[in-house]
Image (tube, one colour):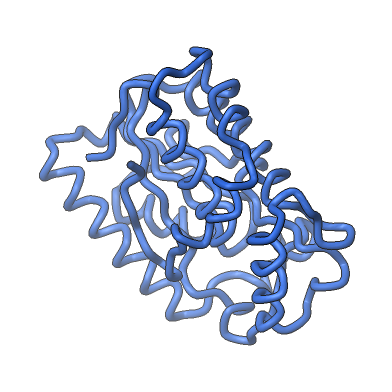
Length: 227
């Protein structure tokens, strides 16, 4: 199980199952579009979410983790909410109950109006820009660093609300790549100059670290332990 001394909880990440935008090859990244039910999971994505739930349950049992210690935190988008709901049902956790929490800071990276609802082939343009400078924003959208900033806030929320839990974070490709990048970098800090998590994340929000987020890419429906 993923654990680290600087975190109060253990974390797993799950990218949402294959969505209707994935099938159509569309970029759906605004909160307004992303929460529409027509942009939820495709049938294959529901199957992927069920498989991920079964795999997660197996990991929990192998590590003797009681289900009352499990939390599912998820993005408000239709494709992530549905994925989280499917996993909760596999684990037999009430989705409307206290163990499942929507966190808006886990939402998809907004790529801006010049990419919204266009072909996902345009991701390569964004990622090339990220590699050159992760502080550059696509016009009207979010830079890698913008996303890192709100993920630091999401982590702070989870770390303050839960203690000794196993938390499954259900989110999207770019945010989960960036989240793994910053947590991995924080774990490698030899002598942290500060103790609180947000400050430690702030210290690793540098171009050389953030520009490498693609190294942590996930497939749709892929479950992964953090660290």
